[in-house]
Length: 129
Image (tube, rainbow, N blue to C red; front, side, top):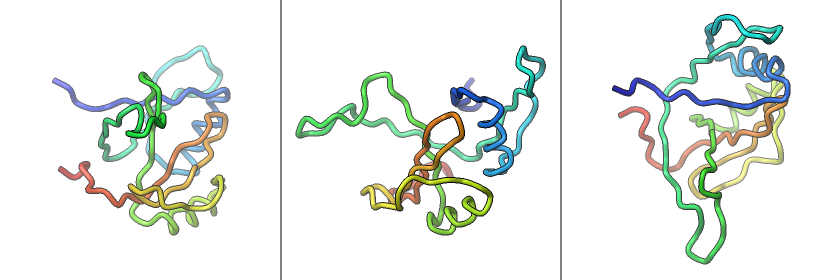
C-alpha cells in the first residue's frame, strides 16, 4: 500500500540546496546514510501535501506544460508574511507577488536548483482531508 510521496530536486550544488531547505525553510530532516558525496545526504519532511493534475494546454491553444513535466509548488496561509519571514532568513524572490487566478504567488529562488512557486491558494485545499 502507498504510504507517502517522495519528491526530488536536482541541483548543481546539492550542499547549497540542502542548506537552504535546512536553514532557510527550516524543514526537519534525516540523514540518508552513506554516499559518495563529501556532504550528508538529507531527506526532508515537507509537511502535508496534495497533488493536482493539470492539462498540458488551454482551450485557445496555449501550452501550460509538456507531457512528462512535473512541478513542485509550496503553499502557505499568508504569502506576504511568509515572504517577509523567509527574506529575513536569506531567501530571495523573483519579482513581486501576483494574482495567478488560483492564488497569490511568487517565485522563490532555490540555490543551485532554480525556482519554486510559493503561493497562497484561493482554491479549496485537499491536504487536510
